[in-house]
Image (cartoon, rainbow, N blue to C red; front, top):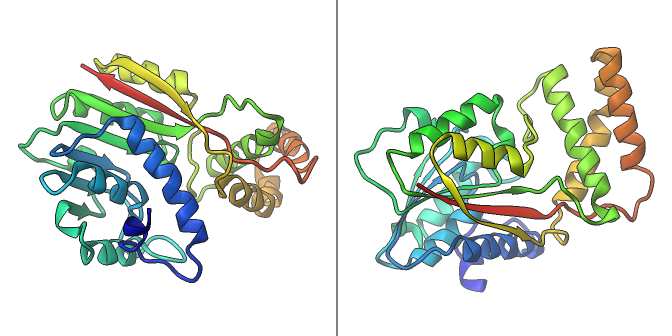
Length: 266
């Protein structure tokens, strides 16, 4: 943990990053990444999962990390600031960052041992785009590792996070904006898309994420944006209001959703 934190740009106390990195390490362990692997990571963001992948592949491995966002995107640390710090760290030589890069336009002759998508699918503005990504992966790898929030929440304390992500998705659909949540995919939808692209699910796992801060962050953000949904159609306002009241029923119910992990091969 500490040697990975030392590779990352951190403002102030490292407790938030330490918590986030704990989860990313757990995801990578469940991806079964081995030393010497060549990994393509789609939707790398500030590199939270990237550093865990780079540590897992070792000195003989390589991680190519791409993201469609620009280097100046992100707060309080931008993607560019985060990747610059990682590049200068002991893990830097194992990672190639590519920002402002759409995977559909990313051309390379090399094959990868695995392609990873970690908590990035809800950024996709159109489900068809994600399906197109899976189709293109067929020519680049035989193995896909996928992680995302699991909307099949199992504890009542996770309900508020579930409501929040739905409010944020409704906001993106009816009020515009480029927020983190454009579409909310159920695990079954991802399994179906992978199957349609020619991949077969080999493993499906649930990873505890209740301790992460994301639930509280997204609940707070949904409360900020809720009033702006008054410009949406009346039926959408009614739906959003139902989610809003459920979300705020009990302040103790603010735990994050869990993550699901899918490993698929062709």
